[in-house]
Length: 194
Image 1 (cartoon, rainbow, N blue to C red):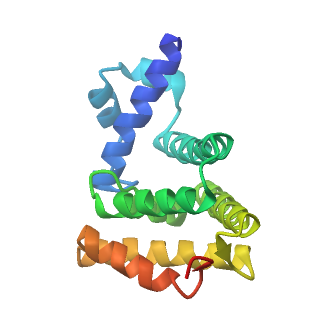
Image 2: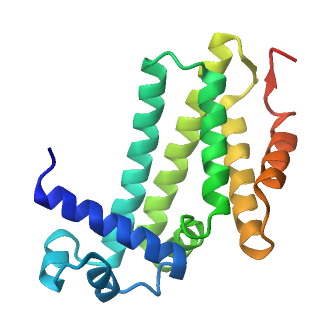
Image 3: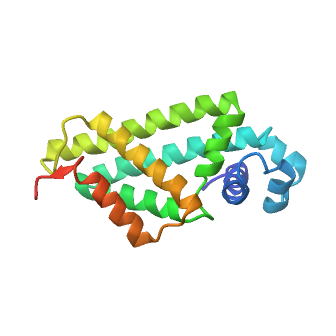
C-alpha cells in the first residue's frame, strides 16, 4: 500500500497533467494545481517547489511507466510485434486526445527552460532506445526486418511528433491517423509475414 505522500504526489501529477494538456506549460500556476488537488500551498510545496519540477517529475514518471510496461510485456511472453503495435496505437490515442496530450506543453517546456530542454533531450534519447529495443526484439524473433533499429526508431518518433503537431492544427480522426501511421511505417518495418 502506498503512503499518503505517494498518493499526494500521484494526485499532484494527475491534476497537473490535465492542466498542462489544457493550458500548456507556462500558463499553469501552482495555485491552480493546489485548487485541483485540494492541497494547501504548503502541502503542494512539501512535494514540489515549482511547476517546472512537477513537469519534470511527470516526464520521468511517464518514461518509467513505458519502460516497466515493455519489461512486463516481455516477461509475459508477448510477441514483439504485438508490443510494438500496442505502443504505437497508444501513442496515436494520446496524440488524438487533447485532454490527455501534453505534447504542446512539452515543446513549450523545452523552449522556456534550460532544465526543460535537458530533460526533454533525455526523454527523446530514452524514447528512441525503448523503441529501438522493441524493434531489435522483433528482428531477433523473426517478426520484423529492419536494418537499423536506432535510425528507424528515430524516424518513427519524428513521424509521431509531426502527426501530433499537425493534429493540433487540423484534427485527425482515429482511423485516419492509424492509416497514416501504417502508410509511413510500412517501408520502414517490413514484417516477415508479408
